[in-house]
Length: 196
Image 1 (spheres, rainbow, N blue to C red):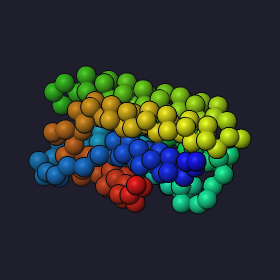
Image 2: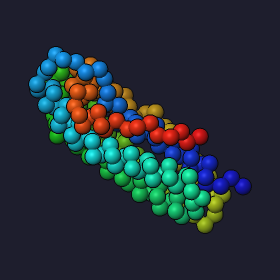
Image 3: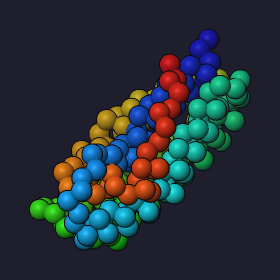
């Protein structure tokens, strides 16, 4: 019988792929200073940093749960809380990008609106995953593992779908301005240990 361990590892691997999404705040720093853009980037990066930490901690909690011999109910509790935290963090990042206004670049308004919409969608998706995991039957390890497999699949899709508007927001001058911000540099996650 397949236990929850291999499936939860798959979940952790899918999760770490999705979390990196929002933290792809890197780029080559450039010296041609644009004070308005730098100020916009600082506002966003400062707001993103605590949320990035929250996402990393949620990730770490799921990773840790895969390394123990955890019971299905422990896995359910940890994963449920992690999905809630991620949902809250992505929502807060979306709110921060919304509050910062459009970056002062060509098409900035559209880029900003698309990124906010995408972040809100990611937040909603994590809230949906929390509902899914809360409904799983922990008394039957086989059924629980089967349910986790479905969640891991949804999570992988979420990781693949969720980054176009963010990449778009962070390209060009906006990405360069963000890369210069101390809080964005420290928001980039350390690569998670491989969970294969």
